Amino acid sequence: MTADGTKGFDLARLLAGRGGERYDLHARHLNHQLPRMLRTIGFDKIYERAEGAYFWDSDGQDYLDMLAGFGVMGVGRHHPVVRKALHDVLDASLADLTRFDCPPLPGLLAEKLLSYAPHLDRVFFGNSGTEAVETALKFARYATGRPRVLYCSHAFHGLTAGSLSVNGEDGFRDGFAPLLPDTEVPMGDLEALERELGRGDVAALVIEPVQGKGVQMPPPGYLLAAQELLHRHRALLIADEVQTGIGRTGEFFAYQHERGVEPDLVCVAKALSGGYVPVGATLGKDWIFKKIYSSMDRVLVHSASFGSNAQAMAAGLAVLAVMEDERIVANARDTGELLRSRLAALVGTYELLHEVRGRGLMIGIEFGKPKSLGLRSRWAMLQAARKGLFAQMVVVPLLQKHRILTQVSGDHLEVIKLIPPLIIGEREVDRFVTAFTAVMDDAHGGGTLMWDFGRTLVKQAVGGR
Image (cartoon, rainbow, N blue to C red; front, side):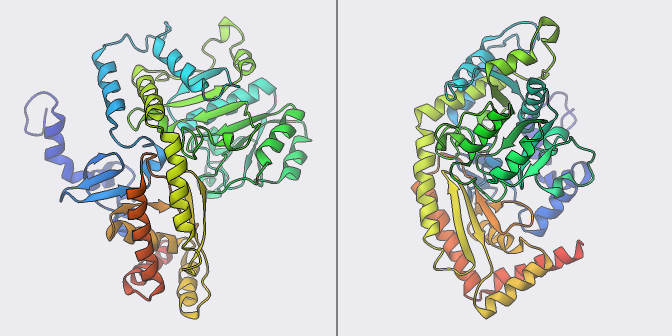
C-alpha cells in the first residue's frame, strides 16, 4: 500500500508524504545517535537534490560538497554518463547473478582496471571497501601460509572483523575483541617493520599510501623500501586504495607517486561506484589467485553473493570512461595543487592554522596551539574538554554561514580533511578559500559566534563523559 492507501509502489509519492520524517525515522529505527549528533552541531539540514559538486535545500540554496560522501562521489553526484549506463543495464534485462555463467561485464571491468596497474593480473569483485580489504587479508594469509598482517598506527581499513584487526585506532576496536593476531607498526619506521618480519610469521603489510585519518603520508621512499623488505622475507605488500585510488591524489593509484612500488594486492572501492551501486575490488598477482583457486574443488572458496552484479560493473565501466574522457586524474592533480597552495599560503597569517598537506584532492588542514595569550586560553578550554573541538568549530560555520560541507578527519584530531568530487575547479576553490578565510578571520578576531559555539561543544563533551 502507498501512503494514501492505494495499491502499488510510488516512490515520489512516498517521499512527498513522509520525507519530512527523515530525522525522526532515523531516531526510532536506525542509529539513534546520528540525528542527535547532527542536531547538536547544526547539521540537520534537509537536502532536496544534488548534482556534480553541489546539493540544494528546500529553499533552493546551494551547498558546496567538499566531502564527496567520504570519497564515494569521485565523478560528482548523478553524472549523466554513469546514470545512463545504469538505465541501459536495467533496460537490457540481463540474466544477472545466475552464479553459473561468465557474463561479460565483470571481465571487461577487470580488464580495464588492470590496465591502470599493469603489474597485476586478476581481480576479485565484492561490494565495499572493507570487503576488498577482507579479501586481501585472506588471500595474503593463504598465499604465504602465515597468520599475521602488519598495519600502521592510525590506519583505517574498514570496520568488519578482519579489517578491524588492522585498524590503528582503539576507538573503533574497543569492545570488539578478540580480533585477529595482527600487529601495529609506526608508519615510516623501517626498523620496526624489519623487526616484525624477522619473526617469520608475517603474511603482509597493509598500508594506505595516504592515510585517511589526519591525511598523513609515509616518508619519501618508505613504500619502496618496505616493499623490498617484505619481499626479502617472502611477505606481501597490500595497498589500500579504497579512498586514495581512482584518481583522488592526482595519480590513478596513490602508490604510483613513488616509482618502483608495485603492490602484490590493491584494494579499491568508493569512487568506482559512481555513487550509485556499492562495489569493491581486490587486484592481485596471478600466482596469488592461482594459489587461492588452486582446483575446481576450490572454485567458490572465496565469493560474494552480489559481487560482479551487472549494475555495479556497468557503473564501474562508466566511471572509468568518464575518468579518461574528462581527464579527471589531471584535474585532481591540478585543482588539488591550486587548492593546497592557496590554503598553505594562509599558514603564516593565522596562528591557529599550523599546516596544510596532502596530494591531489585529498588535503588535510591542521590546527594547533596559538601563541597569543587570548587565543591560548580559549584553545586550552577546548583541549581540556576534548581534543578536536576547534576543528569542529571551523566545520560548523563553513556549513551554516557559507553552505560548504566538510568534516573533521577523525576523532580527537584538529584536522579537517577535504575530499571533494574530483570534478571541482577554480570556482569551487575560490568559494572554499574565501569562506575558510572568513571563518579564520572570525576565530582570530574575537568573533563571538564561533567561540560561543565552542562553549556549547565543551558542555556537550563534558556532559557526554
